[in-house]
Amino acid sequence: MSRTAKYDAAAEGWSDEQYADSGSYLRHRAELVLALGPRLEPGDTVLDLACGDAGLAEPLLAVGLRYHGVDLSLPMVEAARARLGDRGRIDEADLNDFAPAEPVDATTCFRAVYYARDRLEFFRNVASYTNKKLVFDLNPRQYRVEDIRVDLAAAGFDGVELRPFLSPQRVVLPGPVAAALRAAERSGPLARLALRYRFSYMVAASRSRARG
Image (cartoon, rainbow, N blue to C red; front, side, top):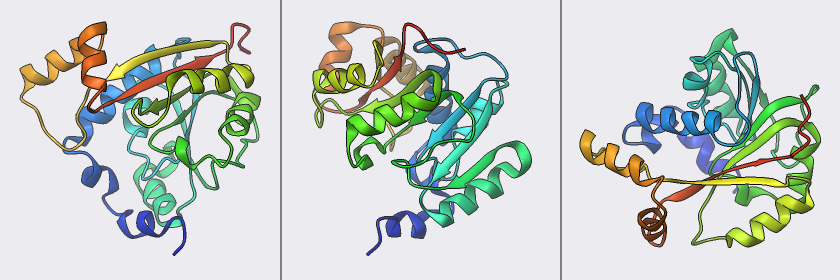
């Protein structure tokens, strides 16, 4: 079975199937893509590796960013192109090997860093074409945060900002509960307790001498 087989079969309606409330979930993810690390400005380009059906594109485009998605699954690429039309670019490629023709301001990679053949080399490749920051998610029950920091530093990312991301993927919470969880993202003890059992970090990696 090919590496993309399960994604190929699920491409149609991917975001709506993966997230109980895809609009709210992806808006919150996009908010942190903007806010963590060096600030993104209207007109900046975001390269979204392993973009799936480009569900993240909508909230990024809504704030004036330019969107470039990349995915290895051809059906996902086709779904992303159908979603975006001429509002963004989508390429079929492996996140390990892809490099855009021109540098981008930010690179994102969600639910896919574990597909890196060599994590350090992946970070180095991203650093070679990213002006401001790399933003990705990290499951602290799967990877040690310090190991990730070491690899990021070796790739040239000397600035690392982490924020707990406490939005459930498969459950729609009542508004007050969802708001309380988002408030808890800024509370160290509560967030660390939640991360022992579920949820993930959002990580923004940047360089003190970022290109601009």
